[in-house]
Image 1 (cartoon, helix red, strand yellow):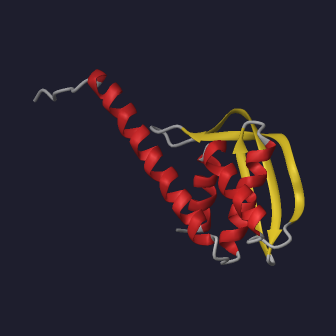
Image 2 (cartoon, one colour):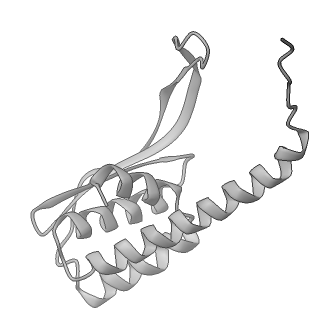
Length: 142
């Protein structure tokens, strides 16, 4: 799993998925003495999308996000999550740093990311099953 994939999955994880693991690692001392480099901060980022036919990029609008950067065992961890949940952003950044540092907890972070990926795949499949009934099939006349 690449760092970008991990960051995306941690950003997509629910607080109920993130917080228990981060709290357990903090209580156990597995993260050592984490340092908060940039505390959780709420801000706006521009959402840029690509129009699928002409493939032109345009700015759809701004999105509320919370970002945070921490350091664990000499490795930086970062997270940017949609919304304004500072605690979840801090937890995700701690988990990213633990994985980046190669700590024993990295296996737990990987397992969490895999669970989030599976949940998202199930949600996508369920959504597709619901909207696929409305798909229109066009026939080409020759």
